[in-house]
Image: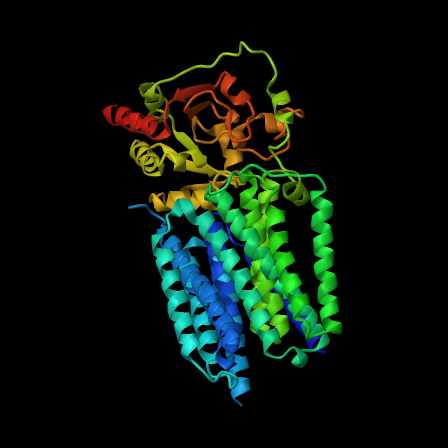
Length: 93
Length: 460
């Protein structure tokens, strides 16, 4: 049953994604990509559990690496997107 | 009770991501949208720390500090011209994180996973590993650490298909024999190999398509990890990213008039068929102009359109062109920028480079929006662009770029092409535009030429 529920969520989210993202103008496609890099850093949620539960060293190291990878995406992605979006001004100065 | 709180927070985070993306529909609201998404991420992260399964925090703290520091440093330091490289690397990290999380979850207790959980572990590792090495290859090609040329060898496609089939088969086998670590290692190593093989035959010019596709795959990998963990937030977020990357991939393919299969397997630029298009009479004449001529043409026109290509960014001339535009505007000339979807090195790249040079975004027009205006345009300045303004794409079925949508600069009253020399463009195709009666060549380095034009305009 889990699998079916998950597929439902996945399919509907894809439709939402298509609807929302097809309205993003060309001008913002680069920030869209870096922003979606940040959002895909949501694996941090899984990485925290992997790193935090384990009393085995292997598990901890795998979890640690997963957190590093995901956090680079999250922090780097949101920050660089913000840096870019700040440049988009209606009137140049 | 705590579980419900965590799930409700995840729901809030997913909603914030969607609202955040929705606000990207206009540059005016985009920045707040990005912040909303960041808040969603923070909520998701913090509430997860309350998960009862998490008992030790040392590794978590270390990982968060190291990852945040690297991310913040990269985000501050990266040059806007290098955004494609950064996005390529981030795609790879996303894929890598999915592999590590799915693998870590598997190692924890393989027997605790259901049959479909085990299969999705295989798929998550497959897509994540492929994204990881594929992105590193794309990065290496973009950063010119390796040659951008397509690398092809016989039986490439059947080999890739065979590897993909073997990996899928191994994921099914994992369901039957959950504790078989060699099977997991098999999936990882062959998926890593496939990532390399899949980007090898794709040329440098097609990297905008590839990084869009890998962007999509990094989302799909995150979603697959959500299936493993039964975590709806991961599934939703991954699907959003997957959809986003797929839309951009399709836009890029359409802009180059090539089906995705052709980009992935076609090895554009590897064949020798290009030369055929460059035939024709050899005594075609061009007209050369100097800075003063261009200054007069533009300053006394009422409407000027600038068509930038990546050559503009290579020459670091974005700021100079904005100064030229400002002077013209002060002389009551209407100035717009017409931007082809593949003008930069990734979707929307040229827009960011111009925004960085303080060009107001209302002046930036898409190809489809600028084309109807060109007939009433007095002067078009083509700077560092070539193939995207080649009328052969409309008129010459023998041309390799035939059918590609272009900016119809030849329809303007006059076109000034800023170009270093008469050399052919990126795709090595001769451009008939240069020989048209309304075309004028302004030779020289783009930045120096524009500085010359700026000086001449100031003296008018």
